[in-house]
Length: 108
Image 1 (cartoon, helix red, strand yellow):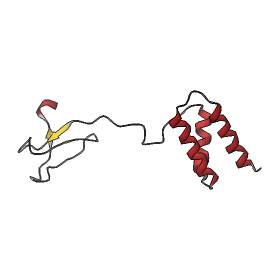
Image 2: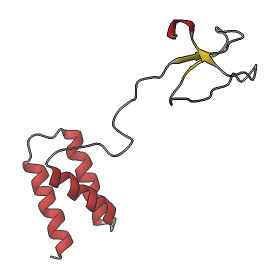
Image 3: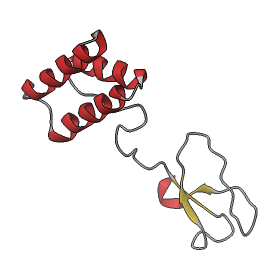
């Protein structure tokens, strides 16, 4: 058995014995190890990192839904077009009137 296979077997055993991770977290580590068996060294590194931390952290960008930003509306007709901003200082425009959106009156 080579060093990489031994490491993957050890990580699988660690995950099976670890009681403080959810079934979803366990499946994620198992999936990473499956990719690692096919030669994906990045997946092996990520699985190794999860095991070393002794806990689970979601992959970057997958930490859950972000709360919506302020509601932005068309200044010409607020009932016509409204959208939530997703970034600070984001410039949003009304697709029909081609004007910059403003915060909704209740949001000010």
